[in-house]
Length: 188
Image (cartoon, rainbow, N blue to C red; front, side, top):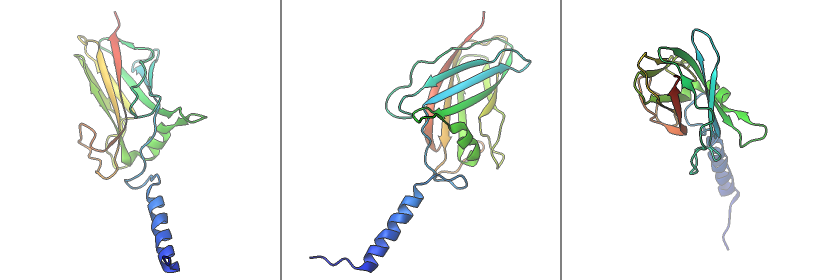
C-alpha cells in the first residue's frame, strides 16, 4: 500500500493549477491559445468610392485536416483601382457565432495577417499596426495596375506564441490560426 502524504498531494495540486493556468488565453504576453476560425471574410471597397465587394471562405473544422469549402462570391476587380480592404475572422462552430477579429485586435501584439498575391500588377499593403507599431493586417489596401491580371490572395493569420513578432517579417514564424486562398478576377 502506498502512502500519499498531504504534502505530496498539495504539491501535485499546485502543479496542476499552474499547468491549467498556463493554457489560458493571454492578451498581454505571448503564449495564448490559438484561435478557432471557421470563416474568413474579405471586404474590398474602391478607395474613390463605390460598392463593396464581399467574399468569404468557410472552414468547417477551423485549421483542422478538412479542406476549406469553395469561395463564395469571387470578386471582379477593376484595373487601375486601389481598394481599401478588411478581413474578418469568425468562429461559426459556436452558437452564436464568435467574432474572432475583435480578439485579434485586442491581442494585436500577438497576431499578424500575412497576404501573398499572385497575378501580375496587384499588391496588398497592410494599413494598420499593433501597439508596438508593427504591422497587424486587419485593414489593408489592394492596388491594381492598368495591366493587372486575375490571381489569388492568400490570407494567413499568424499567432505568435514562443517566437517574437518581427515587424519586417514577410511570412508567419509563429502558429498559423487560419490559411486560406481567395481567387479574384479582373472586370471586363
